Length: 392
RNA sequence: GGGGGGAUUCCCGAGCGGUCAAAGGGACCAGACUGUAAAUCUGGUGGCUCAGCCUUCGCAGGUUCGAAUCCUGCUCCCCCCA
Image 1 (cartoon, chains in turn orange, blue):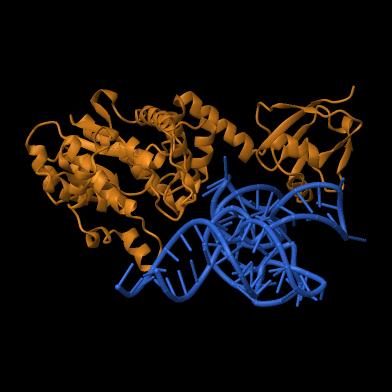
Image 2 (tube, protein in one colour; image 1 turned 180 degrees about the vertical axis):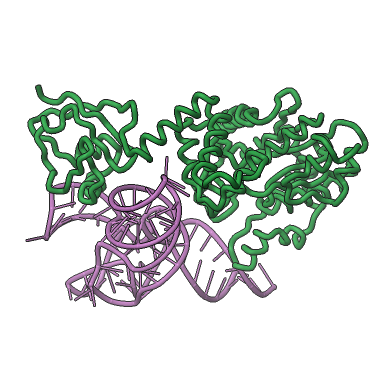
């Protein structure tokens, strides 16, 4: 098999950060059978974001080349609750919630994956093992080895807590690979250690070892940290089109190349001015995840209206004025937009509150209801309400 | 089992008897500017009937005119030695 076309190793290894051991993927491909390509997802948070799709897209490439994806839903690992980091308060999810998350996960994963070439399994099927078996697994690696992992090493050096359970995680993940007979496992670069340790576990269990392939991590919309739900710098694949478009427009220019390469498999067109390149990116991804060309066009129009023209959106929700001759503005704003009155007052004094485009000030605390009726109230840049009703 | 360290406002992290609603950074919000919800700059970020008042510094008490800061007990966390 040559490295050309869309099924060879060269193609499959485009954009990958690591593919270890060297040359191993090529050897497996030469066997000429469909490879079992594993990805594990922990259904702790219910949403897949663009960062996940980097890996999913690569899996899709494998599928298109005739291979099979084994999606492991980490229902069991989620139930145990990964205490990583310092948050001890992390609640253990109940089974129902995990099932729900797993469902949405699967659904969302199929925005990229080909369902016909995907096996979905739950690791609860095999991880709910007897202590005896767990001990066997626990013998396959040493503490020193586990402490090699960068984040463990750093935390250990800093005297930060590391729970035994955390230490066990890589082994459980490795056991998944044994259970599904993985030929290849994909993950972000942060998974490299786990992917390689899985090989060791596989060896100990006498099954063929997998190839560890890692993809670069997609920077979040802040352009600094990796995209992650908990950092709030993510673009979810099921978000409304306007959100997807808007969030993508907010990424810093210098991470655009990474977005292009990892999400669209191509480079930024150097002939395009940055804004246009960013629009093209936003348009394309919005079309893919946000419901097609039409939705993308609408989202872009919405964006232009709001952020370029600084006008109110086409459709503004109505809000009822309270009873009474005069309206206490901080109270109204607080009620309408879920703020505290102090926050509302602050916005007012900062010129962040506008009535039909005219800024109000903090001398406008109590206003006659008729001055408000049927007017457009804008709070900050993006929040609007059309004021209706009130005393007649 | 023994010893040591720690719990502060959304997060990290200063404060160590009054001048503390509490430094600084992050995050977030607003304003200016702009090709953008980028960058940059400025301001803001406990609540309220807002030139004042009220509630916050793990929990419960205590000392003091006055405590996030001192004392006692409790809870939780971390590290080290065995």
